[in-house]
Length: 250
Image (cartoon, rainbow, N blue to C red; front, side, top):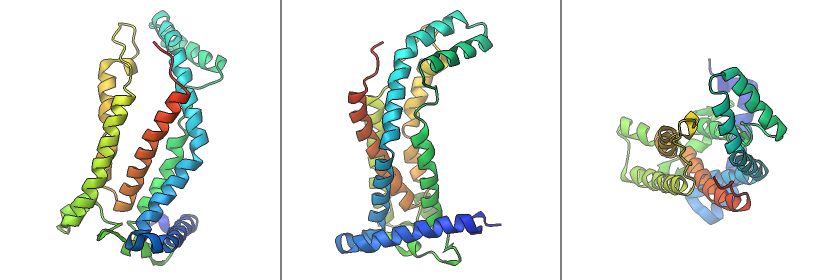
């Protein structure tokens, strides 16, 4: 059973496809054959701009967590042998500060459906019962529905495929490295340090910065464009918001 053939999901995909094709028609005089790719980038920018208020909330939450870090460490030291009491006191501390350990997660939750819709639009041959016109769109001769790994496995990868994906993945890697260096997680190697503040966790978080580049090899080119645009936006946004909401000095 194809879940995307169900009326509600089919209607959403059909509407999303219509919006992309409409934007592509508007952009075609400026971008030519890359109009559909440009519409994906534009949609990404619109989504990220709409999420600016939640990004500000996320920055404020990070600032609050950094300010509460010494008190959290004290709670962990005091109640390290009583996990239930530690959890209760931790949640009470967050409640007293009118915040939550999960504050600021909304941008990630909102973006997931957008990426899922883009992925689906460029892998399904039919949308709401009619041929998917987006699959015929290209960027520098590479169909937007092509994935790097899929093209290599099928033996259809061309020099243009490697060039386009290589350029986009290189941007993702460079942005990930800049992000890793600029927003390095402080390491607490004391005996009372929580697991997520230790050196092992810090190394894992550093490695995870590059997970997007690996993911981009498996998704359609349209989704890779989305990922490239959103990680670049995220870096610029974090730089601006970190200056506006600086973290507490340890």
